[in-house]
Image 1 (tube, helix red, strand yellow):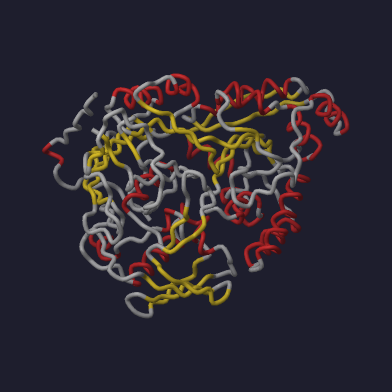
Image 2 (cartoon, rainbow, N blue to C red):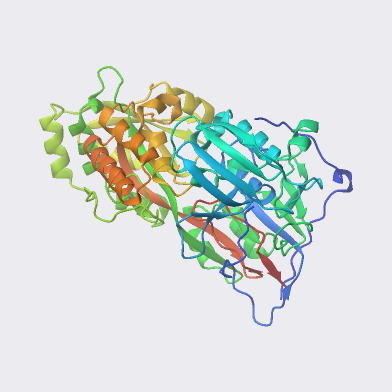
Length: 526
């Protein structure tokens, strides 16, 4: 049996390092799906769990919504409700967590009661005033705006009871409260030192070695079942190939974000297991509908592009077969609100694509650009496949890559022709899946980088926010997605597959369907 290498922490780092600050989840019932214990292995209590990340967290205090920051936040902070999941259930149904009870008074008012006996890592009790501070802070934080900007204020009644007031009627507020960026922070600790994250979660932040690792310890005073391992170390390993090798060798227990080129070597491993799960994310290529003189303003051209790209072939070429084509709507089919057959997928039909180009007056084609963000590994290859496909209908595509902030700024200003992006239905509700991308109020930087403007669609998305009858609400969103098929503001590509390489000396790990993983119920074998 191979022993795991002990990761030794430099003595000079036994203290908290300051870093820039800006504006857990318990899975007690999660099945033991991670890894595959070697014969004769014995489960141990404790140990140092090593997890590799593709990138370091950008924020440690719930001010950024990138995946690495969410991985960290999931361990240290907790939300009022937990979006429930298991190895076989991706529904993300909200259940009580820090708040054990709530009443929706009306679509703009929610009364909540905190569970008692919950303490922050600094020893202070969780109070309603901390909730007020955290939610009102999130409401004005740009990175949290998608899930929080409907919060007007929070009224504190006593230490455990409070009322959330919304500035618009908003039925899915409970789901949004389960998003990791809505975690609850210790107000006193934040005001004393905003750089040091203090939550109520199963792990306590200790320190960071910049561009190397983040070190957490078990919260032995956790209000629920304490974490199994003693410590949790997030290691930065940008190269996916090295992440696979390190998990195989036993230097890393869990390697996240495995990329398609590493699927075959990971699956061939005898010392680690490649875990795979259909995710809630989808990839798309957006069209600019508002740029002056753009051919993409014509829906026939947009439909022709969708017919011209063989998405299944792209998945095979770029993703090594991981994931599958979107099924006619901009939504992963594992989303609980996905309706099979609602909009039949167009599929690959080059003849029909050429017919539509001719009908639109573009039989001879035109020049266009497609943008992707650097350093995303898959998107340049996706762009190449799309460009090659569009040459068959005489669209001459130039490919350009931009750093992330520049990319967001320029696509938000509608400087593009086409652009590659993705979206994740993180809170398991169709408002989050559709409103940020397609409502005209989110024009440009807000998420609607297509320039799609439709009073009819806006009305449906607005009605979906306030409708309390589930059947009526479901029909509203069905109508919205049928309308989106008519407008077709994007080239529908693929829904993603989450892949994690887990050493066989690990048990209990379950992939989160949106990639926001918890490590509290993970254990090690010796």
